[in-house]
Length: 89
Image (cartoon, rainbow, N blue to C red; front, side, top):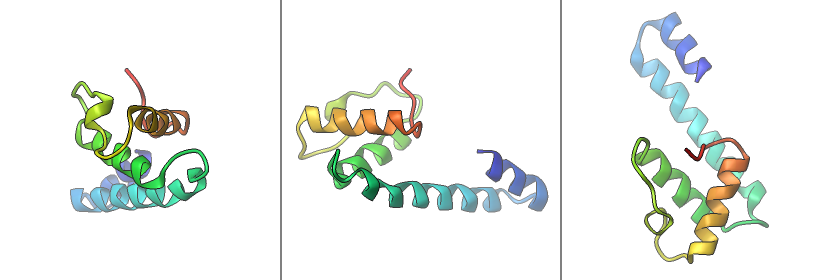
């Protein structure tokens, strides 16, 4: 996140960089309403938060969100991938 790095370099405080990251995550999540017609907003949010919490670990669709079917979770995952918020490796 270049803006977070720039903020850290300017302020020399890691907290400032974390605040930039926090704001970016907030705005990403606010944009989820744009995808409401293509995916369940709550499921999209659950999947996003779950992926962020599991960076570096193998992820299974069944572990990304509770209470949704695999096709719904997969659709949310694919939308986040298409939006380039997450990457499948």
